Length: 136
Image 1 (cartoon, rainbow, N blue to C red):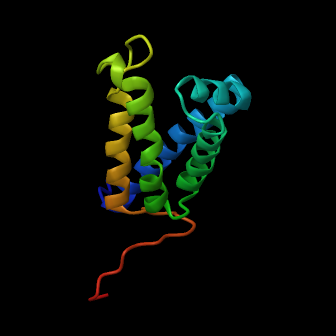
Image 2 (image 1 turned 30 degrees about the vertical axis):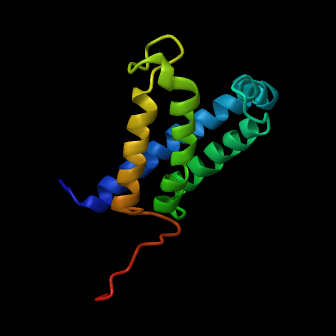
């Protein structure tokens, strides 16, 4: 069994990408862009943030799955999750099963995104942007 960090990074990258893609598609196909904009407006945010968030989740999910600058995409999507914690889930308690969803899931995804950044893109990525050491 291969236990290399590169394979672990690949598995994490694909799992995170799938999650982001699923959340973006949920906003697109179920809640609709108009409904998503309305929800964001109900939070006191400009409505256009809803479709922008939806697009970021879809594009970021695809980029992660394909491995296109995945470490940077993972860290760039953290503000989306922070917004979910601060504006939506934070007041609902820890458990995501609470009414309105608690903050455990988005905080876990923030941690997973940080780990993705630290591990790098992993194997089988289309475009990797690894930080090269001076000795390399």
